[in-house]
Image 1 (cartoon, rainbow, N blue to C red):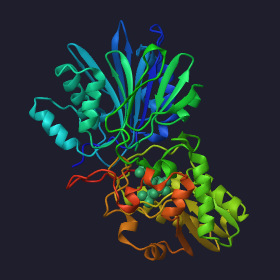
Image 2 (image 1 turned 90 degrees about the horizontal axis):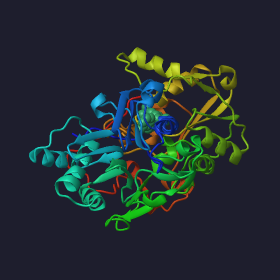
Image 3 (image 1 turned 90 degrees about the vertical axis):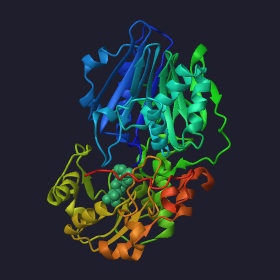
Image 4 (image 1 turned 180 degrees about the horizontal axis):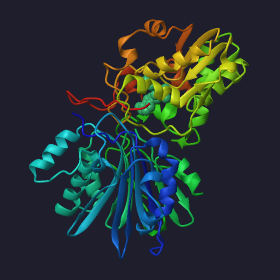
Length: 473
Ligand code: AMP
């Protein structure tokens, strides 16, 4: 079994040199801006020189987990925060983050975005050495490795981080509070995003630049793959891991396709622009004669705009999303699961009836959403449905935290495009191709992780490692 999923989470780190300042409310807003990266749980750890470490985590959205009183009870000029993504796995408070370990001579608090593929092996090693685990989370594994190297083996903190990273196989963007300092770490392949911003004299780390915009912080740069950053002496201090620059860069393509907010810029590439380009590429591949281009809101809006611009076919809203259904919830019966799609999306019947429509979605993973969605659209009686998809067929699981699904569940791993089109009973099914996607992102193919599309994974995958699947209405 895979070490319990950290998956596609959102992380934040905040460093102020003003020891009298409390930064928890600012971290709260940053996490709020990253809510799309995880809705299952949220948490924050803060450090104040007099009070020491404070910590609060809870299940649910950021607004469910924190209120004003709780924020007031998190004093400190340093803080880290986390929003956790939901999968079909166990949803437990113990797995919420930041993970905090507090012992005689020190503490470590850590927020992790990513997935460590060898975490089972590392966990067993630590258990044999006497470590007792409270959660299934990879961050607990990383925390204890760091404790061992820094506090038990008395390594300098940077050497300790180096030694820990040397053992980790997989993806990790980390914010760490240790010894009253904030550290940010990005894995040498750069699978997960992490960026740095400045606000007056304060430094902020976050998974996406939207977290900076909300508190009016100025983006400085991305953390370089394989870099450890910290903020002593009023500046960004940098330590490059031994492995930095020695392995293939592997930025996750799915951040651009679906996961990140369109108003974020990751590794110098604007997500919105990429999605508009995806729409343009879809038009080059499938120049279809139609009356209207309709997005599946919200993630496919830029791609539909791109298709519309390239083709001259009007862009039109045809599906309205209920903005209050964002949160995953348990739907035990099939009837309820079907109802959930209707609750989330509703067609504007007059905008669809009798029209030749190009419907654009960001991706098909298991195919269940598309089936239900197309049933809804068909009820509005379009003349033709041309369904275009902004991600090539997802053929294989992700082991680095996207929680795509297992191979058994992935529709494209089990059926040809023609068969899927038949199942969906539509006039066209057109996926973007891999070269067209790479072109839309505008990054060399070698710098992207495309493992879920072509099974070329950037690390070894241990035998028997199970993939996660996500849960969503
Ligand atoms: P399905 O094909 O039923 O698995 O659903 C695919 C849709 O779910 C896509 O259009 C995305 O909007 C969304 N999606 C894709 N991947 C994920 C993921 N890893 N977690 C949550 N939602 C996702």
